[in-house]
Amino acid sequence: MTLRKLPWDLIAVGLLAMLPLIPGLVTGIDRALKVPIGSELTTLFIMAILALGLNVVVGYTGLLHLGIGAFFGIGAYTTGILMVPSYPFQVSFPVAIIVATLTAAAAGVLLGSPTLRLRGDYLALVTLGFGEVLKFAIKNLEEITNGTKGLNPIPPPKLPGLEADWSSDYRYYYFLSLFVLFVVLIVLRNIENSRMGRAWVALREDELAATCMGLDTTKLKLAAFALGAGLAGLAGCLYVVKLGNTADPEAYGFNRSIIALCCLILGGLGNRTGVLLGVFLVLGFDNILAPVADKYMQSLRPTGAEVKDYTTFSFWRLMVFGLALILAMRFRPAGLLPAKRSPTG
Image 1 (cartoon, one colour):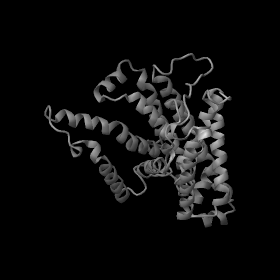
Image 2: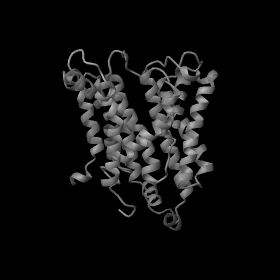
Image 3: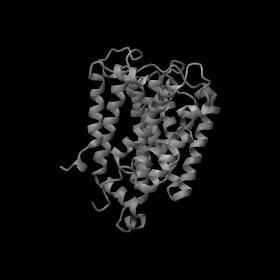
Image 4: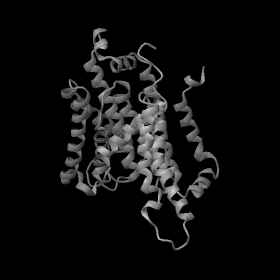
């Protein structure tokens, strides 16, 4: 097996699983970076699941989807409704995560059924519009969603055979999110090597040729929409359980969708390892590197010196991020780790 064919995504998950098990390592990293690295990595795992869901639609089938944040929100609010004390359901976490995933997948089918005849920019506009409609619906349906206040408190997971204080130790959420990410990677790996995975790639490369070969492109697109939306709902469920509430509706809008798309563009469309790399570069840059750089630049200023906005790294971070995307599109248009396989191989 060559280096290129090694399952680098699964290897990365294995290495990350070992991180909290090394005595004093995470504490030392936290002390050096002055940020809770374990909690930030947990968020990155959840966002990686969201980006992998988008990759099913954009990377595998070539459909431009700008509303993945909406399905992220559907999973989040489904979980909130099922688990918060103010509603009578109060189901267990395993039930909530299954229902949230299936609800988001069903919403993907409902959106995809009437719109998959559209192509290119028209499909992108429909998915973008759906995301914005859902965001404002969440804000206005206060009797159900509690508006901008969100649903809270969402209790921590209760897993069979595990009695744990989830609020005092980040490792419970860390390993839960990492395990779900691992399962998602295994499922997507098997799908890629299946007949459906090859059909998706053929559809992405040339829809007309795929149709002439006898492939039912409508069913293929609908399956991609359902799977992508389901993974987004799964990520939304994990997100709100870790957060303890459903957060502001803006967390499920266009910005969330475009950040996930940027992870794909930078890392590599259609490549699982590339998607993980993109998530760690884009969100790791924003959540970990930027705060660390700010604190470092602050330590360089003389004591009592006036703090100017332009003397902080956060002031320049969007420009640095935009420049990195421009350079990536110029020199690596298929991403840092492009898809390994063509429809014929």
